[in-house]
Image (cartoon, rainbow over all chains, first blue to last red; front, side, top):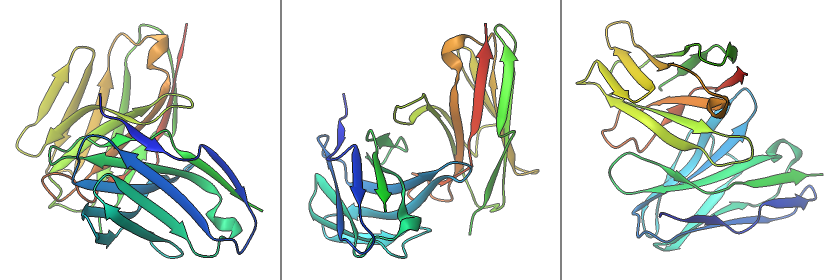
Length: 111
Length: 113
């Protein structure tokens, strides 16, 4: 079974704090993704990576950055958290067959 | 860029009835259309997908149809059961393996027993 693990299920941070969300997959997948899920807006792609140290912007990259130093790990960074970044963040990975395997999600609240 | 609209936003059906969720997309170059199911508190999971060279695909009680001319695709669930209750997301991509999947807003399906 593919396993995508997100380090934190729930986080509460203050405005202006730096936030790290970490994601690890155990299936040697080349591609990894960070999505944001908000009610009524579906899943929106923030960033994705198709190889180590490679990254591409998704549809809503503003206010976020990513890091992929190792194949199995993809981190999402909020340099200075803001209240409008309160959301559910979903990490996903896949090989080149189309199916995305998602993590359990990290629910971030920014106060 | 691609835009995917999904309707309805909520759908209530009686157990045993059929449910249909429809999506339209804007980019005629899109060629990969998956559907994901997300149960309450769980991760989204792929339930079925279709590529542009196929008009219909079926897997037991679920089926997806694609109309490339009209740029819409639909999910059909027959003989609904309470465990079908979930949020369903459609998505579209212009790349063969869906690197940049654009998702619809989701449909909350409630199956009443």
